[in-house]
Length: 251
Image 1 (cartoon, rainbow, N blue to C red):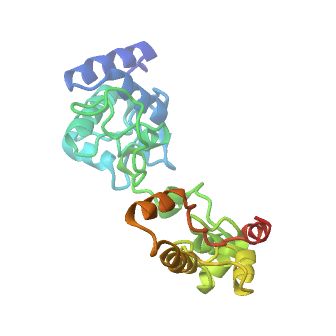
Image 2 (cartoon, helix red, strand yellow):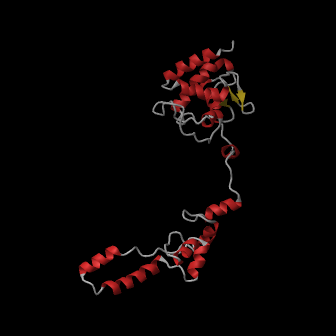
Image 3 (spheres, rainbow, N blue to C red):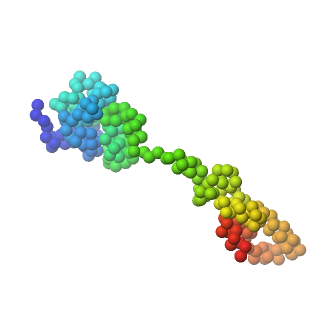
């Protein structure tokens, strides 16, 4: 049988996709990624065949053969293979996921299918299986994903939202500082400065302010106390960095 023209293939996709409620543009995009519209295409080291690259190593190629009695390596059955592809995409439960090209092209597994997204654009499909239902080895699934070096992984483990310096991260790991505790400094300089007695924690500052406030306001009348409190400044903030501590000496 003569090889079909590209126009004949596109027209057949339009007809079959419409009949199954599939957006023809999405189906064409998947097929183009799989075989380039070549009915005689062979891939996966001689195990995937046809327009839909049906895999014969335990994938949809075997299902196709069981259901139709034909092998997917027969290019003369290209129209029947398109029919099978449309049926599997709409009734197989996984949409376009069995076709590896859909994940590579960023096509949502349900894109263009009844009840799914109306365009091919969307979240990348989980690449758990390859072309035509071929199981993908772990190396293919993780390929291209950079791995952290030991040092980078350690630094990420140390880092917390407020630890903006390496010293702060290391001290937090040692338990000497805690970004969540307002009474502890955030950097090595702040820790040393506070250790020398220059920096006051928020708890110490609040305690001193309470004692001073009681001694100052107790003799006053109620309205005088209210007026005086309104004029008071906020209690000093805890010294968390060396720069803050030094600045407080001159303020």
